[in-house]
Length: 226
Length: 413
Image (cartoon, rainbow over all chains, first blue to last red; front, side, top):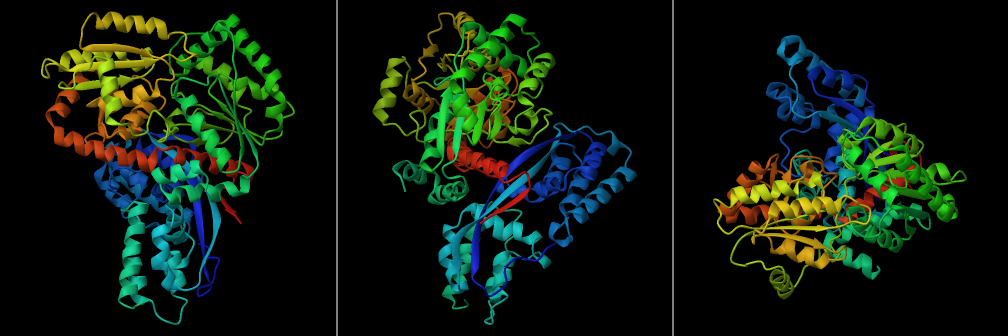
């Protein structure tokens, strides 16, 4: 993964982004087909099915942290495989190709151990989607972390996605942009960094993430920890 | 901020409008033309009616043009619409000739405008040949398909594909609708306009007036389907569902309210079938409303206890979105874009048969608290996902994407 583009302790440049889905035309109705498509689908599609869905329309609570696991559970009715796929933490992988390899290994293991897994038919196909992401500068700069408590409630969900979710695949160690920025100050913002790290981005909507971040920033500010 | 943008900020949130403004900045002043085949009636016209002025408020030079043609042209495009939805019926050569001729005639009038535009959005099959008739075009052309083309009648799709393959991109409402084409195929669900006459809040007395006008008894439950009189919307199946349900819900009233669209020549025949199925039943109201009866439709949706959209095929089902926005649970056909909006036990129920619809009507009318909870979730769901502002955001993203190349990450500024 590439390093982030700004240095810590410099003013924080607030960016925003918009995402649009593009059909790949690839569909899978069996596990074998899923494996074959994962092997050679455009790498943007792997990004979309782990990350992009967080910026799209969502209704129900997410049971799993990626679309592939969800499909294996709900449409293919392979609960054990779904759990194994859901345990994958995408930020632990050095890049998306590495993530693709792990997906393939888990699915191949399942196909090796179960004859029936070859023949199961999903009730609805898995549609491979890829994503185009447009990132733009809002022009807003934050000089000090103390400003976060005021600014975060006003941020768009696109900004939350870019700095809190997308950042995890741009920065070594899977940090979000805010935490990375905070680590660059001499004064330790330990409580704030710990609070932000405690928000699981995969099981909350972007507006819920914004609310949780606001609460943490306000609490830290009120306790004088910022 | 302009008054129009202010009004949307009020409903969708200020952050949403600010996001649109930022996204528009690299496109400011660009000429954008939308082309379709009707200015009134149907979901496409309703979307364009507000999408275009809102785009202009944001700083785009946005226009909406409408092509028109002979009866044969509309017969042909209706047949194409049906064929894209899977009806296996070939289209005769004379009808295709009328289709091509109408497009040639319209190209004469629109060519200068379209050739100098930075972006041209061609909606549905009707104006699709225009691209091939504008050889000096300089901008990006996008074919926007609003139809469920997941399993098209192949001979007709092959013909249409000849006209749309050369576009720079296409847009489908769901991934399942996309067909193999040699350009990027974007997925953008449509939307409703919360500020339109069809969706704004109405005073109680206006709803009461509409109830009286159509002879609806306020003491008895009402189920409503709003849609064109089209066999794919299964209006006769809805009548069957009402008759099955009212054995358990005495006095259940049904309203089938349909408009006619200028580009739909089959509407009259289907309306006659529906009237025949309804017979002289006083609790079934079959209403043919003019295309501008938006406030009446709005009032009917707000008056209803349950909204139904029992389609067998559906592009997206904006009437579902409208019903959800009014806080009503929706019983929808398990097809197309309805699946994206109706989630069992959350925003309504998906059904496949009149029997299934009858069962869910009975369930909901016996569980009023549940209905209220579902209605509240439904409205929030639409606010977050299916308002015009989200739709416009995705069009703007697409335009930026096409303008800056097809890279998957585009960093501006």
